[in-house]
Length: 329
Ligand SMILES: CC(C)(COP(=O)(O)OP(=O)(O)OC[C@H]1O[C@@H](n2cnc3c(N)ncnc32)[C@H](O)[C@@H]1OP(=O)(O)O)[C@@H](O)C(=O)NCCC(=O)NCCS
Image (cartoon, rainbow, N blue to C red; front, top):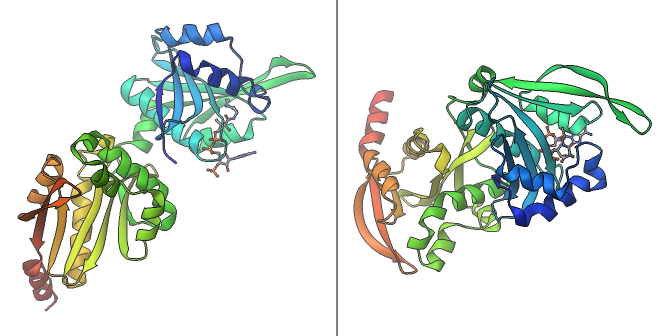
């Protein structure tokens, strides 16, 4: 399930304190009082964030420190995930790196982690943090001492590994259903008020509805840093290939992913001898219509989906198929 980060507020404090003080977490992270957390909300040098699912359920929190550091070195001070081993920690880390390097313009993002915290060290390493060294026996505990590993990532390491990379495209599998549903929900959310409730529900299918589609549809996904950022699906309609559920996450737009997904479908359609591509959209999805027109789709008619206006668009593939046949000769 996908997550997002938002600012922590007063009403989250019970959740934060509960997570921090629980037996499974307090051995690995420091503990603050309610007042220390509250002060952190407004501190210029800190960022206190809740990790929540797309449905708004809190599943953890994060504290960043050193936002005003003159060395541009931001400390990833604390992370606690309450529902472990579900991928929330890794996803949160990806968003934190993006926030630190792309929005807060950090040069270095660093953290310390207890030597025996194998799970945390595993995700930090997997997400590209480099071990800098060990602060040996630096923490006094009841029965002795503990050591801390210091790990960091530098801007150029982040940039070379995580950005400016063309997303890859692949055919989706049923295990992707949850992420695909989340991408559709996030991508259409800004237009929800333009749809009738029934039409919106049909546009943003549930995970189970997506799973059911796998029998009769072919679904593509676009991946960036291993996360699904775009999707599109096709259904066979005799001589036409019908395209639906095309969506690119807002933050991934502007990278020609939509065009690449359409090209992928067109290649598939030509190879399978389809004569046209067709799709339905709505007049208020202006960005999508611009893309379809640029790709050669033309308006063919209008309709209605549960009270929301529909627009049918088509692209003839006859000439493309002919060209392909001639090239083969
Ligand atoms: C550390 C923490 C933030 C990770 O969050 P999470 O949501 O559980 O992590 P994810 O589900 O994204 O990833 C867990 C990964 O750890 C691996 N893992 C689980 N237990 C492990 C262990 N004992 N040793 C090594 N790796 C382990 C999982 O296999 C998975 O890796 P994979 O996706 O490569 O298979 C969370 O477990 C937590 O809150 N722990 C307590 C507080 C804490 O330690 N904070 C960090 C302080 S520095």
